[in-house]
Length: 230
Image (tube, rainbow, N blue to C red; front, side, top):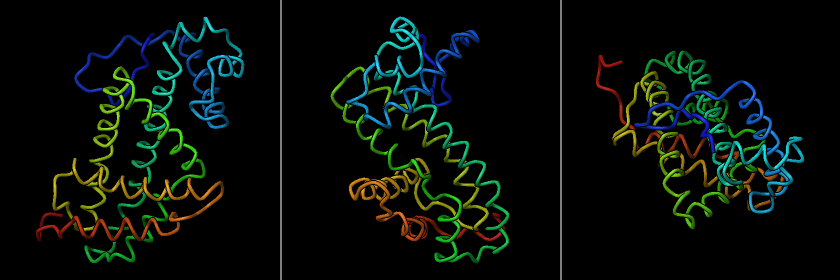
């Protein structure tokens, strides 16, 4: 498999970029896989169904990806890269609004901002289900497990600086190491998505209260900045 470059890799020399034609083939396979995985689930989707949706042969598939699972990992990398970019973009818009409170932002106001800027997208629940399926596969497959773990920690690291900047604008800082705080916040987010997934399509179970819960947690694991630090 020609491995797709990802921003979440750590300590590795970047691979040579693929040719324009190969890159186009990979992108079409990824786009087709997004549709097929969403419709059929990770377990139910087949290489043949993905190839048919993309208009390619099995040979084209296996010249780019070694397995359906490796394709999904590349797809997950792309999705989390999009999420990281989205968080960074929203943070740029949010920082001056938070800074206007001059360090007096309370939990209720924070909940409103979180719900407004960082609420789950319409397809978040479907993605959560697919990620849960892949996690189960990675737990059973020693070849997939290390890559999945490195990828997740890489994603958390990619958004840590953004979260810290927003906190600084609010006049607060984490009271525990950032690399430990981010997974804790992510756990609350994932719990809300799990409740929505279990409640069925279109459910808003727990999602409408997500901003409030994240704000409560943020105020529990952060503390005011020292005067003059902002």
